[in-house]
Image (cartoon, rainbow over all chains, first blue to last red):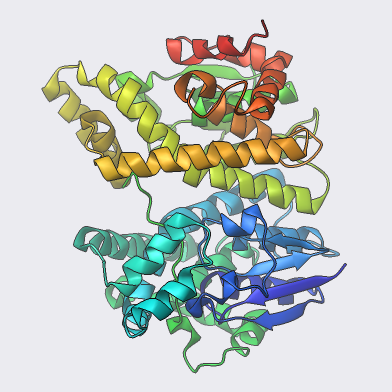
Length: 260
Length: 253
């Protein structure tokens, strides 16, 4: 099987997929792209409907035997299910349900909040400095209109107070949930190490500086963050960073649920 | 008595997804109908089962499962019967991608329109104080916000326009995809088709300007093929309201 992974800096969905790749031991050609410069929409990255319409926003693209795939949790499932054993997903229907449900809540609630706060803190000013015509040229190839609108909102600094407040609350909820889950002294969120640890870590690692109060007095979560970071796969992924603080590199992510 | 109980509303959207999956697998289950418009899902009896107050939920051997799409995968894996997840891991990826796309991008736009036309007006006829109390009882804060929007119809014109755009584009993507292959993600009937049918079965009546014999022949053929399956017939026979009866438009003339 031939695999090529187009990935951004090791943060958010790119960190999930890079780590999953290293956990599962697949050989893949790695292509670093600058997600925060819209390079995912350039001619070099293969696309199809699923990549163009991915609601994850600016995530990595894995091309396996010619087919481009998007959405980090599902790519990680694919990498797991094509590996020799099942290194990052538990066996058994109930344990799988626990993992998919956990990841679903991260994808749907935590990820949009983290991307909202992360792009406000670390991308908005950079995009604002780009001249209007150059920004238009950069975002012109983005085929998903709603994703393109999120890029424009980040550039114009259009961050609504209620959404900021809600995003802070969602990060706090996620951390509370992690702390509670680790309450029985377990090392990993669902017992054995899994995609749930990767995906949760990938979206939350950069939130420590942005929502510090969510992490206050959360000793178990702090130790878990350190454990995930020290995993050889995660350390290897983080080693690919071209900046000293990859957790501060953000590109527009999934949208905040339109129903509130 | 089966060791499986499903707490559900109408065969439609999230409730219909595990209902049809269980039927396709041939799993006997106890049906526990909750009237969504009567807020049964926020009453103590049900909160004792699912404290989040979301529908559907399923119990199996004493364990409680929530999140309709994750329940579908569980049902397919936990029980005998025809496999509804294809064997090829890449097809599995595609099943999950499409289910997420429908659950999080297309579905909310359909429901924004559907709720403003059907459910909002139906619920608004209730006593205002009773309605307010019912909303205050909803456990999840984000669901309280969503219900308020739905009931009082506070979606802005821009939000509704955006939903219309997504519905038109989503229908176009479905049509293009179904023109390429027999079922939504591969040549096998899968969980993605079950998910899609629950979202789209009423399209010819709810979105006739976008979905019709002339404009979307592949979608119509796909919906009819699913409608004709014995499991679909049995599932929709469990419906109690006009919402479910709309499925009859898929009868071949």
